[in-house]
Image (cartoon, rainbow, N blue to C red; front, side, top):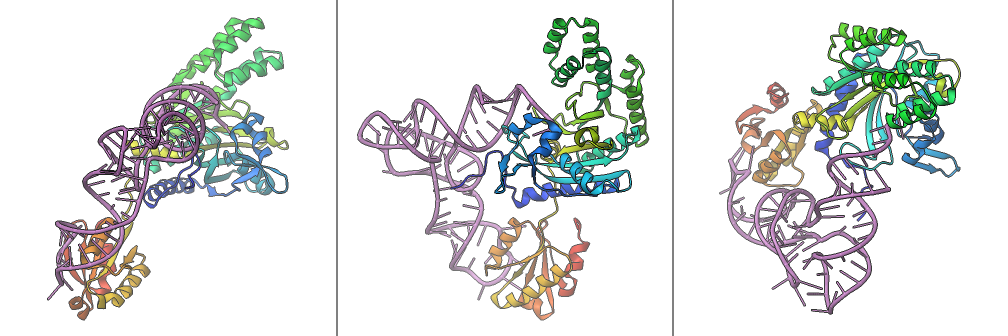
Length: 420
RNA sequence: GCCGGGGUGGGGUAGUGGCAUCCUUGGGGACUGUGGAUCCCUUGACCCGGGUUCGAUUCCCGGUCCCGGCCCCA
């Protein structure tokens, strides 16, 4: 037997009902914020991703040569594709440009809880502006997606890369050393940074300042411990705008430094504390396209949500309930009622109900059992006596209550019942 | 890449160096139209490869996959 590849999953109908429900809630949030959906290819020239994220990521990508000897990669993320799409076809669109996407991504990693080799992301990019209210808008959308999905327990942390970046560039004149220092900060490798400070005889005071800034976490008032600068003012404005949106439980976290050569300003992460080691469900920030592909600077802010982790976090809070897979299951009581049953099920379907009918010529008893296990809300029993009066017996599978209704009224009766 | 714990029918399990247990699910039948029952029949499993052995599902080694963690996380 051929096994499913490591780190991939099959999703059955019950699971997909939950996934689609959650995904749809997040799409709705994007639409409410005026974002339009885009779809980009599942594979791209691998260069697209190495340009954005560096050569080192090749190890963790699914890279292959196609029959034309082009080096391709299954997308490890979708932002790069959206940027490519924007530059090639949408750069003349009115700004701001609001785009979102949903899709599968691939990374060659070791699977564990909330980490798969094929996983699903929903993300949004707001292109063409860099105001604090732009960043706030994106954070607000991120929160709306999670709230819309039903998630309650999560923590939003917002930082600003410019604070550490400008400090290092200002205080360390040697550009090579400064870049090296930033790389270590990016990895949060404080030991190596300290060693380098010793080796290069850089001031200990600066090292302490860097680590203390990276340590700033908590309410927005923590910013008062820093000297005012453009980045701190920007951060404050983001928090102010979020408050106007009714969002006041975000934290400042200047320790968010990952992706330093990519992000340029505000960065943010959202964790679901109930998850284990892999508790980050969302990450994002602002960046400039020009630094990736050259050309005119275009400012953007975006984020990506790990849909799989949102699902996991949701189910740790409470079961995800979905609509019954079937509204009605039509059962002929006897064989000579079968033909009549098809007319009934066809009418129910044309009324937009999820309706099914016995295809296995089973007995009434076995059909009732099937209707129950198939999750039907109602059994529509078609019998001789009812048929004579152009009616059916409608059985509520939850309560067991039955009533005789006119054939024309079945759909209406079901739609009137609770849970419709 | 590394570490730990696991793989017995579709799901859940028992167990053993020699016939693989039970429950559930699936399919069929009986039962004159409510039996979502009951009874009967039936499909279906020891992850893969090598070793030890007369004989391995069981013991040993390797692999693979799953679960969790480290590293990493664009």
